[in-house]
Image (cartoon, rainbow, N blue to C red; front, side):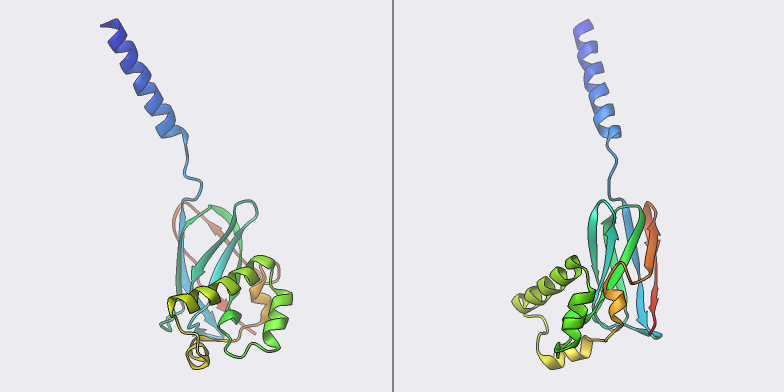
Length: 165
């Protein structure tokens, strides 16, 4: 009987330590609307940059609502960038300017999104992209120049971004 109680106690202690000792490192959810000069964006990405946990992407809905949503983000302060240039149907000039201003992660992500869209049969014609593309100032494509910062707390968070010239 003593061995049974000892074994049961050890099992209970193991479950308690393992079950309660680990904290979810990315417990935040965020959603909101991205507007440029008062109008919702029709596409693009909102990228949340943690100083020590990487970057987290949210796609801006292409239905004209400007809404975005992301889950499993870390809590705390995050810098934010917004990119739309990968939707540009005529990337000459603006694309080169954007690539210089954007951080490496933003440029790689934009290139990857374009490839994924093509592979998935998503809109890639000039007309389809033009309908979703809104040129925003280059500063918003770089976390260091966007001026956008959020502080996420555990659970649900809402942040709208009103971008201006």
